[in-house]
Amino acid sequence: MIKLTNVSKAYTNKAKVLKGVSLSIKPGEFVSIVGQSGAGKTTLVRLLIGEERADSGQVMIGDWDITKISRREVPFLRRQIGVIFQDFKLLPKKTLEENVAFALQVSGGSAQKIKKIVPSVLKIVGLDDKKKRYPNEVSGGEQQRAAIARALVHQPKILLADEPTGNLDAINANEIIDLLLRINKFGTTVILVTHNKDIVNRLDKRVITMEAGSVISDQAHGKYLL
Image 1 (tube, rainbow, N blue to C red):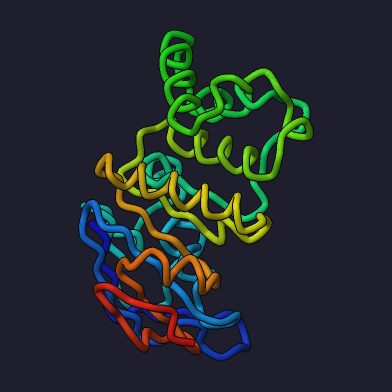
Image 2: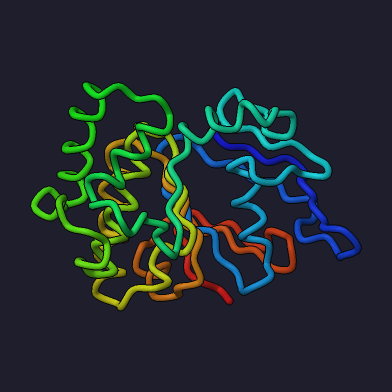
């Protein structure tokens, strides 16, 4: 599903932020990518969603060679990869339902498709009873659930969660992780990028540890090492 081969990346006049990274993630896996600030996690995320290009090496997602993808192909790639961020990125003047629907509208989804999919994903994340509320009318955990619902509308094969619990308390954070585990059981590959030691240790799933732009550990059932 995902394969990086000897991938390196540097920004202008700066040291390499990724140094010969090689790893592979199988379909249906749940993988945590961990490391301190500056380890290269954010750059890795940007490469996977086509926001940045590797300077060298190869990034494969399914049959897509991301190192050669054109700008006009990036939106099609992102429909295969649902992305969740720390800061939710919800539109404040749209209801939760409208925020989720908007993700389909901008990609040309029909009214019939929107009517079918939006209630379904809101139910998956447990927000079907709060769909008419605005982001400022619900908790941070519920905002993140709405963001997850939005990420699921294209039925992505991969869900990339970049510090999804960073703005949440422990209870809401655990609920979000439990939701990601449920989504993973449906067959979706989940990549969790985090620095939350407690969550990683509770998961007992595969852990890839990065440090200074390199992969220093890859454990099948791992713990947070740093």
